[in-house]
Length: 247
Image 1 (cartoon, rainbow, N blue to C red):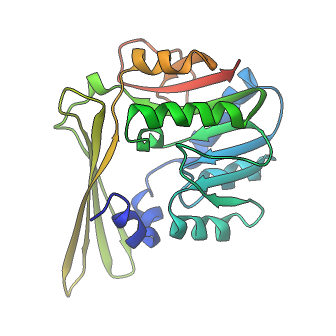
Image 2: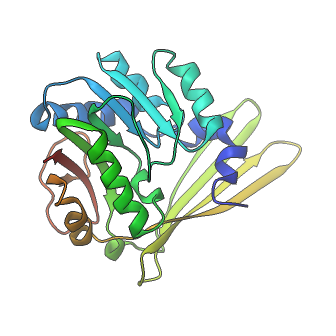
Image 3: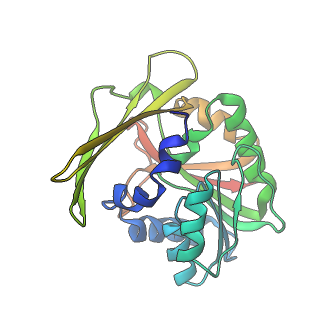
């Protein structure tokens, strides 16, 4: 399969795959950070928005929220979920906006879908251009040097008569600027079991490198990867939330 084939073919199952994600808590945490560091505005753009659950939460608390994604089937679902929003099919490595946003977000480690340092640099530059004065860019990331290839997350979910098992985990060879997200989806019912396996090429970067890429454009603040309590990053954990204020 190509990099995006699995997500395209199974876009109707995406929300089921992410059923254990607390979108409301994530959105509220970033909103609090925006209130702390932002410019007071309420225009929002979500990069790699998928089916739009984060956009929905931002709209519900009063933001003018829009999204972009490279996957059209995802965007079709997002448009049905959030008819008030504008969704565009764009690559977040190089995107354009008609009007600047006060807040740009990229949830669920999707910043890593820039599958190389040059694309990551282009994404950072695009976000900087797309932000209003003193706007902020918020995303979460994983440090390549802290990845344990043996770890993975797993959950199950039912839909009608089908039982789904989802597995995902990071893999990094230990060198270079590429890591991967390995994903497995199993769909089982009384008649048959189907399995899809995919591996998504992603950018690998440690936090020192990432901060160096961001600093020419932003004042960078790093927080622990905890959406319930806002705490400064302890400088040792391998997952973090980045809050970047436009210079």
